[in-house]
Image 1 (spheres, protein in one colour):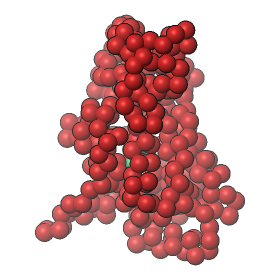
Image 2 (cartoon, helix red, strand yellow):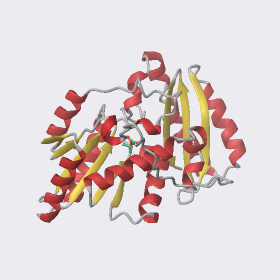
Image 3 (tube, protein in one colour):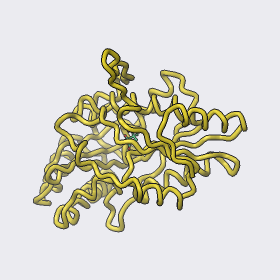
Image 4 (cartoon, rainbow, N blue to C red):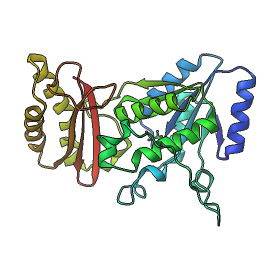
Length: 286
Ligand code: PAF
């Protein structure tokens, strides 16, 4: 497994693989890997085929964190990540530093961003106004650096995948996006690097996100539900976990991300809940 930290070296390696007509699968990550990430690597390997190559990037992207967010406490363990990726059969890991991705030399500060203006405005985008600008910018940069044929993202970040699919379509990136299912802990909590911030009590109560998705699915299975009433019921349900602080619940059309009412089978639901300073998200098709 090759470990690459410079853009020129990564572009040369990707260029060589393209000349050898190898299909390139790519999994962008912010590291602190768990089984969910490894399932994305497996999916990229399948998509790349037996002659193909799989690249994983590990980069905690500062532009997608607001100043008030958890950038400095975002968990990192590169040694462990590399060992997991060796085991998962990645061919190369791209691990640039901030100076490489966002050079800030005197007189040449980074000043070009990629902004998606529709799908990025609701839910996570409303709660974290600069977040998606950072995601689309860094993923566009990574696509230019790694030049993948296929890139794999997790369904847990449903809105992120939708925004990136729109960016790929609008800006004609020659990349096929695959969205892979959310991996869950045994009790149903969606796997996330942020779960490591939870203390034992918070961790026990964090499963309320999954239970809320199930409760909503059960309610709409009986009959369509007015969005406002279902939201109010779920708010009560969630705040019965005393450490949970609801950020938002949204019911929306999975293609447009626009709110819908009544909520029916097939409607997409997403929610964000704080436990202390840790903000967890999850979503499901009801
Ligand atoms: O989903 C993530 O881990 C990040 O948002 C991504 C796509 C790697 C961009 O930094």
